Length: 360
Image (cartoon, rainbow, N blue to C red; front, side, top):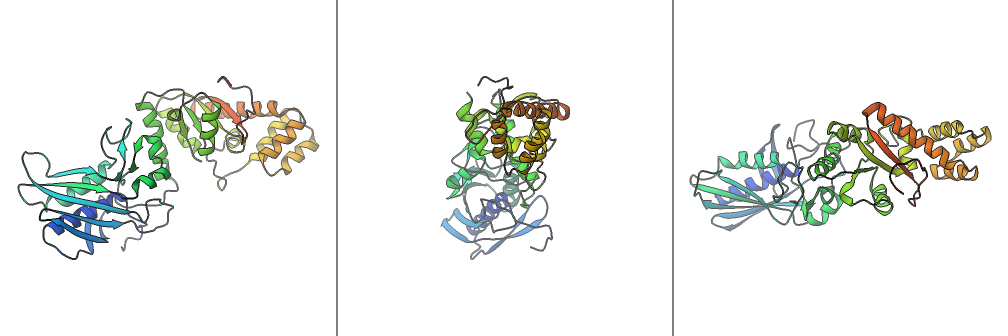
C-alpha cells in the first residue's frame, strides 16, 4: 500500500478479495497470494492467506484484517469466501451473495439490510458484484457465501446484539478503507440504535452514557433493553440526531460523575476533551447556600461520589442534585429543543435527585 491515508481495510474489502481469489481458483489460477480489488476509492492489493479448490466449479479462500491504528475487534479475524458456479436459469444477476457461519442475521428493521437477510452491507455487496461479474463465464451464476468462523464470539463485543443482528458480525465498509474509529465511524455505529428503535415503534426511550448506565437503568426502571440507547461520550451528537428524527422527549439516565458535565454545556463527555465536574458541582452547591468552607472541600474532592458524601452530611444533596438535573434539562432545551426527564444516580443506582417525572 502506498496511499498515505491508508490505515486499514474493511471487512467488505477482505470479503471481496477472498471471493475474487476463490473465483480465480475455479478458473484455473493456482498459488494465489494476492489479488487486486477495486474499491469505491481506489484499487488495493490484498494478501490472501489460503485458497482451496473444492470441486471443478467451487473453491474457497481465506484472508484476515491486518492490525492498524484502531482498536478494531475484527483485526486478525479469518474471513472466508466460498464461491460456487451454477448454470444460469434466468435474467437475474450473475452474482448471488449470502452469509454463512459467523455473519450476523438481521432481526430488526431500521438498518440498511432488510430483516431476515445477512448483515452484509450494500457497499460490500456492490464491491463483490463489480469485482466478480466480468470474470464469471457466460451462462454461469456465482453463488458467494461469506463466513467468519469466530464471528459469533466476536459479535458479543460489538453493537450488533443491541441492533438486533444475531449470531455474528457485519460485513462493513463504505470506501473499502478502514480509518480510525475515534469519531465519525463510531458515531455512525451508535446512531443506528435510534434508527432501529424508530423502525420498531419503540417509545419511552432512555438514553444512558454506556454499559454501566444501561445495567442500572434496567435494574431501576420499568424498561426493556430495546428502549435503552447508549450515547458513549457523544451525548450532544446523539441528542441532535434524536431531535432530527423527531424524538423530542426521552429520559436521560446516568451516573452523576458522567452526566453532570452536560449541566455545564459539555456535550462531549470524554475526559480528555473537557471535565468541569467539580466546578459545576461547586457552582450548584453555592446556589443552594453551601458555605465557603464546604465549597472548598467540594472543590478539593477527587470524585463526585466524595462530593455527594459531603452534601449528604450537609443535608443538601437532593437539592443540589435537583439543581444540576434542572440545568441539564435547560441546556438540552436551549440547544436541541428537547424536553428531557433527567435521572441522576450513584454507582449503586440510588436516585440522587427527586425532580424527575418518571415514577421511581
